[in-house]
Amino acid sequence: MITETLTKRQREVLSFISEFIEKHKFPPTRSELSKHFGFRSPNAAESHLRALEKKAVIGIERGVSRGITLLPLAMTEVPGTANTPLPLVGRVAAGSPVLAQENIEDEYRVDPTLFSARPHYLLRVTGMSMRGAGILDGDLLAVHRTPEARNGQIVVARLDDEVTVKRFRQEGSRVELLPENPDFDPIEVDLRQQELAIEGLGVGVIRPTL
Amino acid sequence: MITETLTKRQREVLSFISEFIEKHKFPPTRSELSKHFGFRSPNAAESHLRALEKKAVIGIERGVSRGITLLPLAMTEVPGTANTPLPLVGRVAAGSPVLAQENIEDEYRVDPTLFSARPHYLLRVTGMSMRGAGILDGDLLAVHRTPEARNGQIVVARLDDEVTVKRFRQEGSRVELLPENPDFDPIEVDLRQQELAIEGLGVGVIRPTL
DNA sequence: CCGGCTACTGTATATATTTACAGTTATTAA
DNA sequence: TTAATAACTGTAAATATATACAGTAGCCGG
Image 1 (cartoon, rainbow over the protein chains, first blue to last red):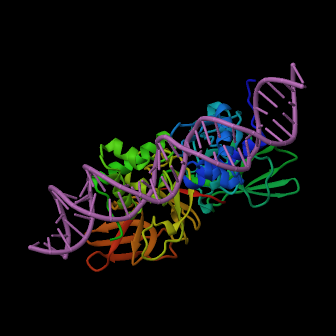
Image 2: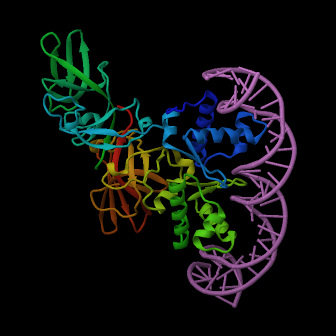
Image 3: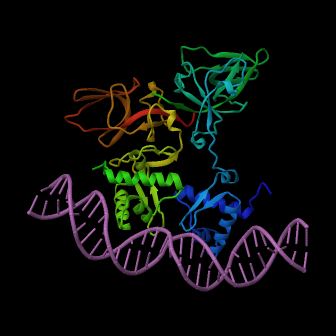
């Protein structure tokens, strides 16, 4: 078999190892495994480890205490270990999707649990129209990709091939995109006449320079 | 003394531990340390570990093999700690070092290349005194740990056991800590009369919620 | 029905690891 | 000068840990 699947129990063991490392910063011993699962024999843990080793999700260094290593394959089996980088979207070229390859400037690994909702990408903000919300020119807006927005949320909207960041307010078919800066005027959109696409919600800000 | 400095040798030991963990994914034993440094006695390693523990850069779990943990303070001492998470410092208890264990609320992995200088920790900002610089209440300030500041930089300063974030200006022995909000008054310090500690420089901002 | 796998119990042991105790030498701060 | 600290050597021992060997029981595909 090419894809060796883990049994339910093996996945439990793997999860425990992963969580143990997360918590203690070093891998568990056989007896710590046994204690957690209620094994009366350390050999129960040993054979589980051997099985996981054979299925290439962990590595075991022989004769070494706590010599357990999570191999890359383990990441696909136990959730929450994922750490995919966020693409940084710079100037969005007219007519291209925000996440089109040509708009991606860079990639950064940022802890997704940091923000109120999981961000899908970072958008470099240009202009000062959201200064009042503490979003300045050059800031990176963490964006959660969704087409739905509620009143008061900060959205990434696309209007006539232009991408802007504004506060969202809707009453029936009338949408207002509100800046947070008295020097700028609100944008009013009638959905019956003009097309408006919500690219996502702003869930956080990163300012790379002060 | 609040800032316990490491000796050259202790820094070497700490570096080795850090590199060992990076390479093996688990901490070294006393004899592995001894072998690397050429100690003929495991006790040489033991006493180094005790010293590092006393200086709060590592933790040692008693009676546990490989029970060494790198504490947040270690990151400021050993460079190139690429993928280590940044500690989040919340309310700083009076009289304790910013990076003391009791002040650490959480840890987040944030790409260090994102910011203008390498951040050592994140500090949760309270209050609106820096609103004009786009730093709002609840924001996380990415801080680069250094005691040196230049005019115009945003600093984390400690004054009378209080930690504040302000813009720095110095003329001789007279230091001004400037807020960026007309509702707040500048803080003036005469270095000959009052003690002022620069904990670090603000190198970026993360806003976890909008 | 057999062989191979999973999931254990139970015992035993070599060895890996921590850690205490007793010193030595050099450097630094009071 | 003295005391404290750093940086080790050397020995010993308790205990933490890995791991082999011998079983039991259930399940599955051929």
